Length: 540
Image (cartoon, rainbow, N blue to C red; front, side):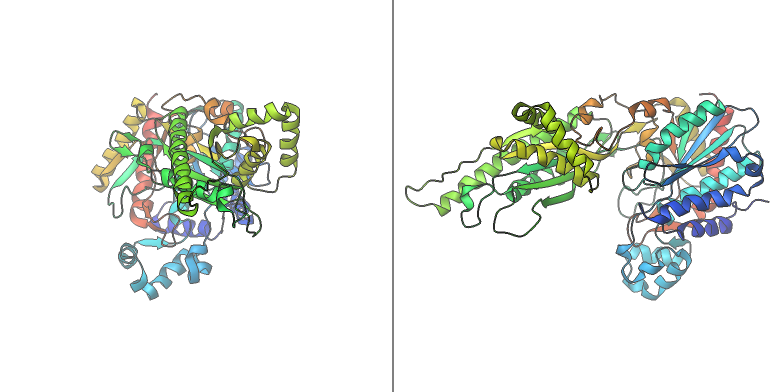
């Protein structure tokens, strides 16, 4: 008997998933994988084939789940990927305790409907939306994948389905990175042919109030560049005897924040401009000494640009900031100093990449000593990836004080390659099947978009549209080989065509996050079923 097919059944399944508060790095992120295993292991298929249902450990003790349903001796396999982690719930305020109870939260929100944003209030009154953390992003997609897996258990497809449910998508995608060798191992062991990878990330609005429905044939890329501003410390009573790192980082912020030069357009799709995700000085205690160092990190999205293209834009922004910092210093000094007085300090600023800074440190101390200092920091590490990347760069900068002030460009995890199957005729045909079926059966105009803009784990299995040398990125990434490893070989070994067909929701990562139920749990499962059947019936 099928348990996960009707709108009501899928809503109940979704609520059971959401009730696991699987915030990234929490114990519940482990528990939800065990729950997925629990609800699948008693199915007749897995009672007969227990070897096809597995939990796989990550190095840090978290787990990912794989659930394979084989159709006889078929080799053709469609991979379904979904993440089970969610972001935190501090933004829910007084409703924080209800954030993981969608039905109760949705009911309670009626009491403050006049305080809700207009669109959220309208959706609440319709009675067809479910509020709560993870309802949209992306436990609804996982719910639909489970319903498809159930159909596969009953023999509805002429091929195999492999569900891969991962943790950590919301932070570093460590779950998907750990899944890559698992995918290869299952492929080799079971003699599978991976035809396509389908994700169920929800549709993202192109603008506030966007009523359109989308599917995606690719996923946007992301880099996280950082700038270490290393100034010259001085006493606050002698402000012109040094250069404040906070002044430096402030001008850098003006050059980077929302900079239109980074907006990339491919056909009618555009990347959002850069936005700061970190901006602070690196002083650990209060004193009247000016901060010696400050750091800024920026979310930079791309589609077809190369890493070298992005590097050049970043370094140009640093050069513009350099000129403005120096001009600001001398302009303000002219107001303070009088007559024949001159400043004993005249700042210049070097612009370096991490790789160049490392080589400067080696010139001064030798490769063995620089490596020893970096290894000592690595062995004593108690920071996350972003902060520890900064620490490694700051350590090198302190060895090269003689060339300060300086601005150092580096990269930190996470990194999401841009991937696309937009020009794959077979994927285009499958997308057309989905769009035609949505139109004919449900009168829904489903439009294809090349790049999913919300970032997704498809980045690690899809084909890249532009063969940008990874070395351009990795040599500027302090953590590469020092606690972080981008598994380029594993990524290449399981590369396959990709498509994302997901539910309708609103306000991801906001306290008004919500899911539309009729399309998501009545129409979407049928659209995906039709598309999967097409992929199995045709050859790539």
